[in-house]
Amino acid sequence: MILGEQTAAELKAKLAAGEVTGAQVMASVLARIDAREAEVHAFIVLRDREKLMAEAAAVDARRAAGEAVGALAGLPVAVKDNLCTAELATTCGSRMLAEFVPPYDAAVVERVRAADGIVLGKTNMDEFAMGSSTENSAFGVTRNPQDPERVPGGSSGGSAAALAAGMCALALGSDTGGSIRQPASFCGVVGMKPTYGRVSRYGLVAYGSSLDQVGPMGRCVEDVALLLGVIAGHDGRDSTSVDVPVSGYGSAAATGSGKAGKLKVGVPKEYDVAGLDPAVKEATASTIERLLASGHEVVEVSLPHTRYAIPAYYLIASAEASSNLARYAGYHYGHRTQEAVESLDEMIARSRGEGFGDEVKRRIMLGTYALSAGYDAGYYDKALRVRRLIQQDFDAAFGVCEVLLHAVAPHPAFKLGEKTDDPLAMYLEDVFSVTANLAGLPAISIPVPPQGEASPIGVQLVAPAWQEGPLLDAARVVEDNLWAEAAAG
Image (cartoon, rainbow, N blue to C red):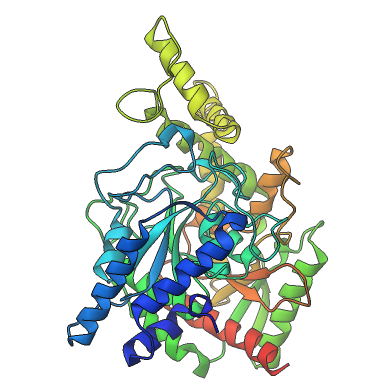
């Protein structure tokens, strides 16, 4: 098996045992990039190859000398391009920041480097994380490695595609309304959104500040647990970071400590909606059947305010985006128009008009309207009240179950260009994922074994706040039930 296609957990074990070297892993990943990147376009920028190989060799030398090495020693990690990196441009997939090189690393990038992970480069994304297909990037679309005529999902589509194509061992993404979980589902990998406040947002370029959360992506649950264990934890530089103890996620998921007990899984009745793709419905139903056959309990629960989730989410996210993106005005940093102007207002208008893409402009206008005098009470404030009702729905559901299980998205990966002219259809792709962001809960996408040549499909587990450990245990149980049967078949 190609080294770049093995799980990070497998590579970590082989590196520790001396069966392979970090240099060999890096060479394999770079070979996969050479083979697939031109078609997939997962990256906006890659680091210098000689530096990457030198870093891998340096970790190998330290290991050979008996020195202590970090949890990610020798593993190549792809980073979404809205996470600041001191030596690499951070564009957010936008012309507005095409030349921006931050003077510092994001907190999660610092922690990856401190754990001896090797940052490969920056992955493509929907502009400022506003999209569900990675078709909104100013630097071109990313294609799904499983079927290049289909989207990889978004907005962390580049990270998911890089993983699925074997072009990295682990990846970082961000999730505002499903932007880790949906592309993970579309590309057949695992992606997790932690509890809001679990992972520092310091150095994450803001979209919706009360919704954004950085999270890990990998080829299996154990990989995600490994990376979460590195990036999770309190950071005083982020005012929303919460000082809640971080447990040993990696060891819990690796040993499958949840296997000894039986899960009590809740299935929301509101998620069985009209228009749900038959393949998605079958994937979810078959997962439930396998859990029941293994002796786990499945109960129906209700999340009655789910039907208000999409409008509430897009009002809150767009309002916060309108405020956050006001800083990109053509001065200090970012794109400035080269056209002759007669006033500061004209310079700002031209710079923003040239620098932002259509979807970003759409959401800025929606958010500005929702916050404008006379309308804020009817839109933004009401959306916040609906958000609280959605949180209460989850509280009630977790009174009768440990985790919730449902689809990640209503459809598998769709064709490139299929939804770009219909923003509402694109927004509705997030109907099953935005609720976890509104409630601030941890959620994870786990791939279901594909049937023949069918597109990848994931199922989603959601847990109460701060319960990442139990969520990963449950995810490992689901993963084992799904893939053990597939392997046996």
